[in-house]
Image 1 (spheres, rainbow, N blue to C red):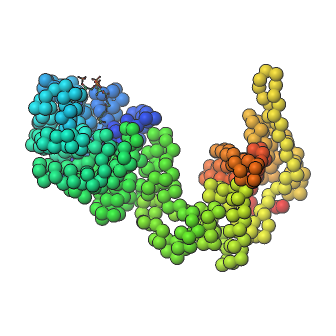
Image 2 (image 1 turned 90 degrees about the vertical axis):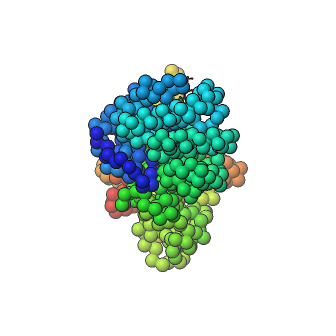
Image 3 (image 1 turned 45 degrees about the vertical axis):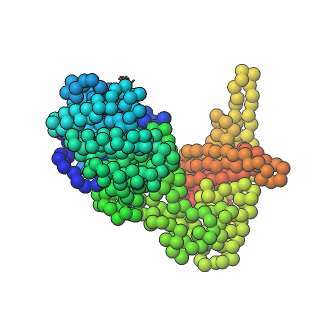
Length: 535
Ligand SMILES: CC(=O)SCCNC(=O)CCNC(=O)[C@H](O)C(C)(C)COP(=O)(O)OP(=O)(O)OC[C@H]1O[C@@H](n2cnc3c(N)ncnc32)[C@H](O)[C@@H]1OP(=O)(O)O
Ligand SMILES: CC(=O)C(=O)O
């Protein structure tokens, strides 16, 4: 057994259920290898408990428990197996599902138990007394087998509203049978914080059980409900990384632990772990193959991104004036966004962020603000295209646009063939280092052909361009930007293996807009590579 043995644990529990409830989210389908990778990330982050799945429910979860205990040396977490109380009318000792929980080898077991009288009668099709017996028998049996037991009271809050005495009797039964923590679950996710706080406080007073909270996010209050339960005395929080979970999700682990550490002043993670939070959040998103939410509290790339000019002017004096915490505490960074909402301070701070010296030149900064506003009116967007903004800024600082080549002309041709296929060909004519170059290339579309032709033209003179790769290409039609005409905006993301950058082009024609974004992308790539401008 490579899970750290820990017979009693009076400390506050951070319990992660990404691998069980998180995996119940539509669109997530984890392999055993994915689960092992996520378990390692969560253990590194320092959660106390990792619920790995339901052994016996499917071969993947059974295999996960077998492999996790062989392959992972957990530094911080206890491995937890999830399953239901025994079937009605049977005995826990003979229940195949309970046997699978024991066979998983997990030192801690979470049992889901019904605590809403209607669910007992309709879903379990048994009596209220038999349900209590199922809880008592299963908890006692697992305790006798030397396992620590937590009990999830499913639909607790709705059950409490319908029949408070019965809901509490389930908590009492689990507690008296030896469950270390009884977790009140807002399974349908319909509760609000004040309601959760009141119910948790009453149940603690009436049962004396140690309580935990498991909140689904159907009202958008799962994090708030979790913290409200803690306010009322719960000492065990069940969460999932990035809030993944059934329907709209579960309480998001990251804002919950950040609140506990930074707002409540509790120590729930190992030293230094909070500063790893942004990295861990993104790493888990990568494994589950979902794009990290840019606007996620604390860890989203926009969590500390400032757009409004007034905000920037105050941040210039003191970042705390518009930030609730120092982003570095959670491993994130502050970013300034440049747009038509920018003022001088936004440009000054962005210049600093980009390492461009503006030398306290108010007139220069004013000119940049004006240019940005003018260009944004035409359809450019600099908050999404930092590299194009940096080229604009350097152009103003240096008094002329930074150029590595001068375009004489370009042409893209799409040929529609009788067999329904298309041939795409582009020719570029340009000047670089005093030389006139004409290059032609084919591509799988006109923009791809242009990109290839530009590369063919420039690579001999600038071998640094060989590393460049187009990572993303987005087109948007901007209705009514210039009077009655619609305008096309193209955003291109380019990478060189060490980082990536975004550039923007705007024109009435999608290929012309793409060409502008490509020109900026290559120019910025050469700037990054430290090449001196030649034109
Ligand atoms: C709120 C939550 O998220 S709880 C976690 C839910 N997670 C999952 O359901 C994912 C894994 N589940 C599964 O793979 C399957 O549902 C299994 C293997 C657990 C059970 O599959 P089956 O035996 O085919 O049963 P099925 O899924 O149709 O129904 C669940 C059965 O468990 C019973 N049951 C439900 N909750 C409990 C409970 N707390 N204690 C005991 N029995 C329960 C139901 O009454 C039903 O019994 P029935 O077969 O006599 O009608
Ligand atoms: C146990 C659980 O996942 C719930 O009640 O929502």
